[in-house]
Each structure stands twice: as C-alpha cells, then as structure tokens.
Length: 215
Image (cartoon, rainbow, N blue to C red; front, side):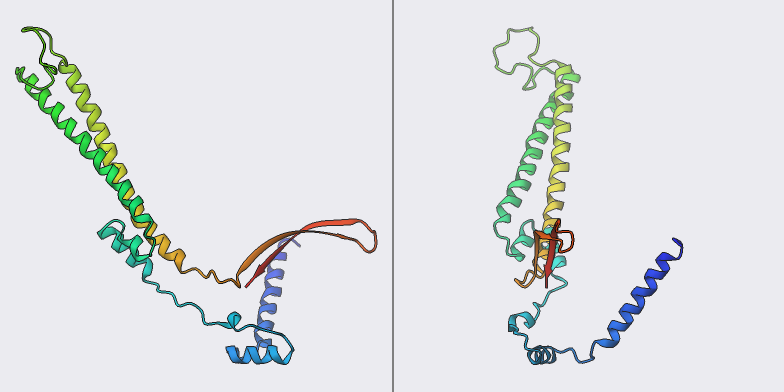
C-alpha cells in the first residue's frame, strides 16, 4: 500500500492541475479580470492590477563589475551611498595594516642581513644611541629574526583580509542589486495570528495559529 501511495498522490495532483487548466478561461488580461470581478460585485483597486515594476537582469552583474573596478562604485550604482564610507574604511584599514607591517618587516630583514654579514651599524643595534662601546646590542640576531617573522606573518594576514574585504565589496554590490529588484509591493504581506474557538459538538476549546499570505 505504501509503495503505491506516492504514485496515487501524484496522479491526483496531475488530474487536479489538468482540470484547473481546463477551467481557467483563455482570456486573462487585466481588463477581463477586472470586468469579471465587477460583474460578481467584487470591489477592486487599480493598484492590485497595476503594472509590475520592470527589472534589469543585468543590474547585479553591472554592480559587481563596477565594484571590481573601483570599490564602492557598485554601491553608488545601487544608490546605497551610506555603504561607500564603510567600504573604504574597511579596505583602507587593511591596506594600512599591510603597509605598516611590510615596512617593519623590511627594516628588521635588512638589519638581520647586515648583522649576519658582520656589520653593527643597523638601527636596532643601539636604538637609543647610549650604549657603551663594546656592549651587547639592544636586539641580537635572534631578536631580529623573530621580529621579522612576526611582521611577515602579520603582513600576510593583512593581505588576506584586505583581499577578502575587496571580494566582499563585490559580493555585497551584487546581492544588493538582486534584493533591490524583489517585489516589495504593499499588496504582499505575511501574517501569523493565534486563534481560539470552541468545538460546537464537544464544547472544547481549539487552539491554533493562522498563517496568512496576501499577494
């Protein structure tokens, strides 16, 4: 029995859909629908049958392309001007972090290479310039190596984050362009309402939730 149940349900649905297609009249224009409803005494509003808002299927691609060329330009295309400062603040912070760590990495790398070559004139040998002749350096070779590794790691991390923020800027422009074309007409609504009534036979209360969607 269970085996044939899905096929049975599918057959019922197929017959139902086929019958519905036969019942629906061929003339389904706006004027004919309004005429039929008026004949039945139904009050309608023109806004219900208003012209649908035209969409531009290329808008998401354009927004993404503009943001790829210049971060924030896709947000301007979508008229989300308030997002532009956020885009530049995020990407600008990532670029600053990369530049800052890269500069320190280069400085420690240069000092480390000179110390390995036997020189003692790098900027980290006597940072304050008050060391006595022949005294130990403020940062030895191990310190220079450790510092350059730390700044190299932070520089690479800043680069990855900056690239991710740049990609996020493109994705945001693309998704936002899609969302702007969704139908948000006032005739569309969704509502949840709890209800309570009494069973006329047993006089017992019935509880439930009504889920209503208006198109």
